[in-house]
Amino acid sequence: MQEAIKVLVVDDALFMRKAITEILQSDPGLNVVGTARDGLDGLEKIKALAPHVITLDIDMPRMDGLEAIRHIMIESPVPVVVLSSLFSDGAVTFEALRLGVVDFVPKPSGGMSDDMDKARRQIIDRVKIASGVNFDNIRRVRMQTQPDGSAWDESNPPPVARNLVALGTSLTGPNTVIRLLTRLAPTLPAAVVVVQEIAPQILPAFAKQFDQHVPWCIEPAEDGRVLRQGCCYIGSNRSALRIGKNEEGIPCIRLGTAVDRPLDQFFSSAADVFAQHAIGVLLTGIGDDGAVGFAHIRSRGGHTIAQDASCCVYPNLTEHAIAQGTVNTIVDEVQLPGTIETCLS
Image 1: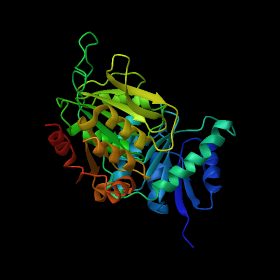
Image 2: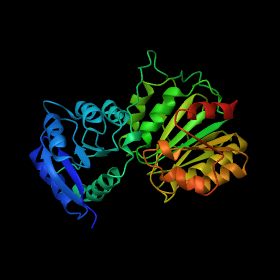
Image 3: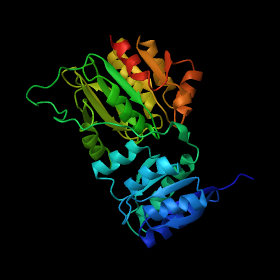
Image 4: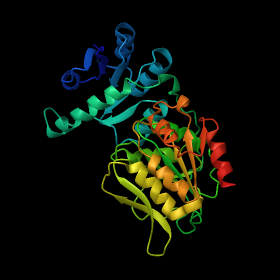
């Protein structure tokens, strides 16, 4: 019989420690081996209890969650699922994902509320998925704040993009996306559109904070937004994001209700609009989405790139596309920016 996943719950509120424990213990595959009241207590419990995963609050006394993550990643590496009410704080969400947490999940807002009930499945799923990460491939992103910001003048916007880099990923993808955008030249003759695993509530604040740390102009994906050179648009895979054209025939973003295979739709729509000028990039993630969309990009003369599974936190997405024969180029994370730039030259 397979051993239950050992979980440590770290939260300063006694009620939330009890509530999260009850949620996790309701699944026979999970075993809460302990709780901690703050980051310092959590670090001690990690060493004593050797959990497979921890759930971590952010706003705590003595040592908050962000400081705890920094120590955990260096001193006691273990997958972290952040469970916090601070999802609207762009600095917090961006920093947690930059440091390499598996996911940032909005905390249920109250006792035995409907919100708590709806969050139960998500919390259980995230903890189970976190237990299977390739932890050796989780790394914090080092970056510097952009002194002048990267926003452009509304009266003199950048030119409409003639090429598109379509980035697709799922869980743990934001960390890889952040790292890539720090290394990818914003002078490339292209727009970048990202579909990734991130809660829609977090997305605007995440994009705003992201924009302060990379030379690209980072914006949340919005329906009808024109795709412009040097701009990166971040979307959630919990919505249906596709590439379309506006009434003037200019390439833009179209958003709709959630679909079962958001990456296939995203990549296919990119091929329909940009044809041979579309570059599809598939990064780390769970599932088998994206291979069909990659095939469509190739059929229209575009190029497809997959992150080498050996350097993925989760290899499923890229392994599936490679097995289906829809990938032109397989590269590790270090080679990825240069490969994209070569395709655009």
